[in-house]
Image (tube, rainbow, N blue to C red; front, side, top):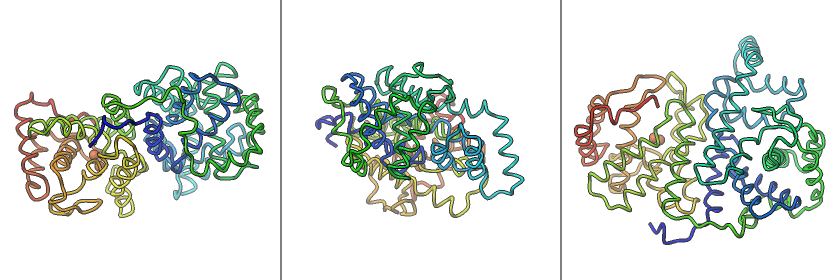
Length: 452
Ligand SMILES: [Fe+2]
Ligand SMILES: [Fe+2]
């Protein structure tokens, strides 16, 4: 790979990674980028200075960085797909009790008996605090991720406040009017406008904006939105949203190696937050894979790529509903098919991210097996490189030593015993031997997974 020798603008990289956040949020690809174009247009009309524009730009792209943090609880609370609940909830005007009721009836516990659904609805109503804390988890986590990525406190504050409403009836803190940072007010408007515009067109979007003026939205921002209603070129440009034109020009940050590591680490946290059962999976798979590769004498650049690939290998899981990921029982055929898609999604996401496209084949091959029985491509042993083999071993070991909804965590010794049956037909003998040596050399328990 030529990482470090190529100049990669940070804005391009974060823009490409925002597709992963769209998936987790249940939105079609490009939602964050389109929201970014809308929000930046508003900022330009408002005359934001360069620094404020840069903060807003990254806040818009990363606004859903915390969305995986409440997926599991969303799915459990609504008894429904977390993505579907998230997607449709932004359409509803929560200040209208009837609208909120209709949404709940449509979303909650689909396919269950009327009685079961009513019970679930009542439980949600009684748990107003729960929904507040769900939103809090999401907003705080998103802000934390932005800071971890090296963005400013102002960008983080914008993300933390994106679901607050002008009238004080938003979430999670119930801030009112100018208590809400202006960047957060722009985020709230931009993301809602994007969803309405895509689904219902320009007329309906402006009707919605006017209706929610002074309720959800800052009236001054709705005013600004009115000013470019007739700009047909702008609205058409959302179709294949290209954010490079609105990227902060004097702040074109080029990505170096440590920054790529930092981004991989932050995204590993987003991925691991998706399910309580995998809360350290990507981070630990990264540590284990790196240790094995070093043991095998791999070159530094190979180890570095492997570390990043391990941290990002399950990014495709963001697309899977937590109803499936966290299911305590056996998965049915459809659910299994959905789960088996995730390495393909990982491949699709990473191959379009400058800086990570080179590790896409490695990251997406972690469920491939030497006898060709793996997925998604059924690669053969000749096609599986050493880093791919190492990652597969690290992934299996991490998963076995972590607790799952359907079984307890195995000890490292038990995990090795289970894996031994697959060596060398399915899992690589050298990588396995290196792992075995590492386990025996390390303090007992140091590679034991926590829950997840
Ligand atoms: Fe996986
Ligand atoms: Fe994994």
